[in-house]
Amino acid sequence: MKKTVLSVLALLALLCGSCDRDAKLVEENIANAEVQLSALLAQSLEGEQVRIPSSYRDGQVRFVPTRDWVSGFFAGSLWYMYELTGEEKWAEAARTHTEHLHDIQYLTGHHDVGFMINSSYCNGRRLKHLTEPYDTIIVNAAKSLCTRFRPEAGVLQSWNVDRGWQAKRGWACPVIIDNMMNLELLFKASLISGDDTFRNIAISHADKTIEHHYRPDYSTWHVVDYDPATGAIRGKYTAQGAADESAWARGQAWSLYGYTMAYRFVRDERYLQQAENVVKFLFAHPNMPADLVPYWDFDAPNIPNEPRDVSSAAIIASALYELYGFTLNGEYKELADKILVSLSSPAYRAAQGENGGFLLMHSVGSIPHNSSIDVPLNYADYYFLEALVRKQNVENGQVVVDL
Ligand code: GLY
Image (tube, rainbow, N blue to C red; front, side, top):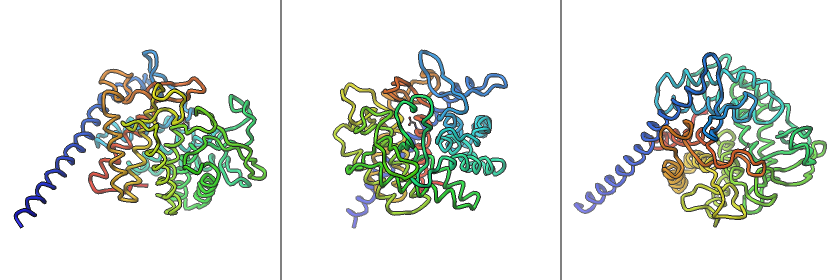
């Protein structure tokens, strides 16, 4: 009996030790983010002007226009700072940056309106119960995204093919795995409006993506080109990866996050299974580094002398916490924790006062386009903060995230 009591006490002491460590990891990251993001926020507000920080290069913070696909992430990071600290100053700043994106609700020129509005307006709605005009804007944005639905193919077209570098590829209806992320906006728009059209389009897109985007090992092609008139597959390619047949790291991260999120709304076991199969691909891969921060492509030609992509690691960590909430498979939480420990180390997290105010270093935008290589990126910070929120929730026994 005495022995059993002692073992229970020893186990509790061990668990409390790990609770302490977990709480400290989150607290310490919040304290760091307060310093860094305060500096970045100050740079983003110049008099009446609102500027959207996206990256930092050559000693300068880079800003993007509202139509850029990354325009919602800084607002979203500010919302997560509010969620993590409860301090009104972050909510006020988040509202300023969110409402600066007002016109994005009408953007129909690419699929990324989902990323942009979900990270900004949907987080504001969730955290501050802001209904109008937020609800109208969210539903209008979903309508804009749905103008890209190609019913014969059953998918949302990602990119236009009449200009820019995409025009040179000979595609008709390119769909990229990243597009799974835009479905979150559609699921929420259906819940807000009561109109199932958005949800049905999202389900069609997710089902077609399972059918056509995956290889037998559950890695994904980056781009699948459909014939919009018949739904036939014209070809499978890469845009941002090392080769058509390679596994571009962020694409694999979007794939894991996308099906985990889709399961949250649809509860279709196939989506959960897909996410779990992607986890197996990622963590059994011989090129996954020991610190679980992937190279920019799992098949990059010069591994280990290739850039890492911290943004992929942050997206994967956030997705794993949600997947843990659905499965209670402790392995997923352990993997996510390990990624957060890596990202919180000086190898990846910038020293205070450096990195232009961004939290994380060493992300990759697109190597084939020679764009944003080994730099901070605002979406790496966004998903890192989201992972911290989710970790805090998991540690508090609140495992399923709010819609
Ligand atoms: N959706 C663009 C990217 O992941 O780079």
